[in-house]
Image (tube, rainbow, N blue to C red):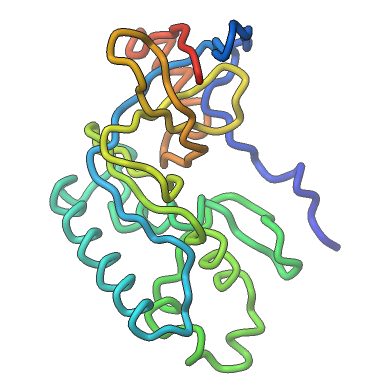
Length: 221
């Protein structure tokens, strides 16, 4: 029997903060919490695993960036996990897929061994196990990875740039990437949704209560 998607533990980065928004002209005013700013990115784009050059180039870039970030973070994440594990959780958005090709649980990790071998080289029996295969396709399509100034590792839209900022918005179910439009105002463009490992399950609310983060009003245009 297929598990209900509603039974999967949902992302909940900012719990207990009521949404409050209004529209003025072409601006949407919302409440949110600034978390950090992107320092470095690895844009994966939409994988074409039948193209040898494209696949090999992406694999090389993945491994090079992992090596750089491993050194930058001194091999450990703030959750005390190895940075390699954090990297692999972000690639699949921490989701595990079931036989019906739908997310069935949290805690998923990127199947490096399958990616290294290429899908075209998998046996029939291996290809019939869709969990890791689907996770790789869904995780990499039109997304990238990013490292922030405070060394948070994130899955981000492939339009993300260095300098974009990570926010939790009141009422939002995930974290969001915003781009500052006016240095003199708290005005931003919406870039997209993102997954930041270790910040998706109430941790932002905890930091707010501890006074480490601040709730503020911003506008989206």
